[in-house]
Amino acid sequence: MSAVTSTPDTNTPAEGLTETGEVVLRTTESHEARTHRYSLGGLFAVLGVLMVWLSTSTTGTAQFALSNAFDEVQLPTFSLPGLPVVIACAVVLLAAGAVMIARRLPGAWPALVGTLAGLAVVIGFLTWAAAGRGLPFQISNQMAGTIMLATPLVFGALCGIMCERAGIVNVAIEGQMLVAAFTAAVVGSTTQSITAAIFGAVLAAIMMSAVLALFAIKYLVNHVVLGVVINLLASGLTGFLFDQLVRPRSSEFNAAPTMKAVAIPGLSQIPFLGPVLFTQTVLVYMAIVAVVVAWFVLFKTSWGLRIRSVGEHPKAADTVGINVHGIQWSAVLFSGVFAGLGGAFFTVGSIGAFNKDITVGNGFIALAAVIMGRWHPVLAAIIALFFGFVTQMATQLQTLSTPMPSQFLLMLPYIATIIAVAGLVGRVRAPAHDGIAYVK
Image (cartoon, rainbow, N blue to C red; front, top):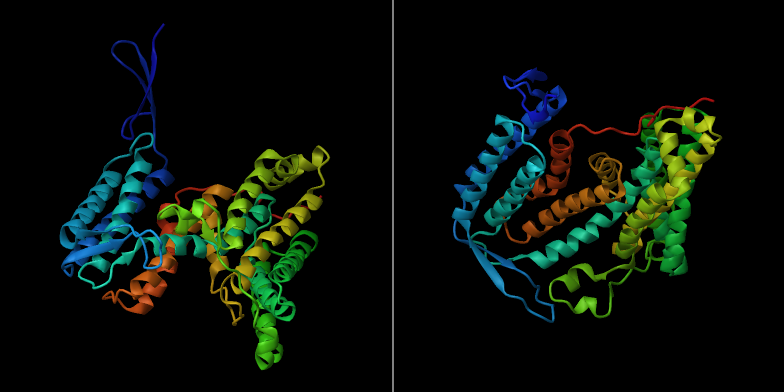
């Protein structure tokens, strides 16, 4: 009997017979995978060239502080030579781009190359930005701010995942969080209770979810168009109420209490990790719990199985007795809880006051996290952390007098979103019946 072996080869036939009589099965690379590999390699190469250009303006050393001035335990500040580090990162990026373009890598090698390239971008850019500056780059502030800024994105992403796993495209995350933020500010101001503000925000987001479910499930409105309309409705409604009700009486309706950081006893005393991970507001801790809850509900409960089955093949689910529309309604309404918590972050979770369009596009970034996270709660939360890192980095760099326009720094999170969605995601598969109305 002839032996059968399998070898990856993109330039040979799919199968063949060797001189020794062995049948060789060769795998081929799909057109989509090849296009993604080329685009990813090209992106790394472009970033490498950009890093080379940045090296021409790099002077001095870059200082990085592991502790801020208010930490009880002061960790050392370390320095990196600016020019050598930036050049080394440029070489890594150019090499990663060349490797990705040259051939397909087997196994976990693509992920390893991508990780090295990502680290090279972050280290090289931060070294360039901090080199020759009078102040060190605060790593602890960067990490703590990343977690805080990622909190509404995590809630928004979980909202989108619950809807889309049930087959309902949710482009209205922005509007849901905006209405929740407005409600939290007003309720918190009138009651001076953070708990009441959060409950009000959740209730308002659930009501917006009900609007989404009503028109998407019952009246079969196109999901994307419906989401855009809901966002416009939320922006117009909150703007009108803000101008007519809140602004003239801001001391009464726009002065909500804000959450204070809660230090977890014992853990908050750990140097570096304590202030970063274990001295956060309650909403940050709730976001971590929410990721676990969403994962458990979707993959460990019968309700979650029904949600996923409805999103993949509603006709088959209907055949076995599952109420398709009922499951979709429950999933969309449940997603409103996450949107409400995310919206509450912008007011009672941070500044305590509402401003027009205070969510500033975070709902759309959360939607990008849903896609990049492949509709999985844990992966989407990791992508939300990435966006939070970029946003916090833009804020941190402004304090270092980096030779880059502040407007460009503020654009960094959105530029990263576009690049990530366009070049880093690759081929993803949404739930098969996502966005398609089911008519029994």
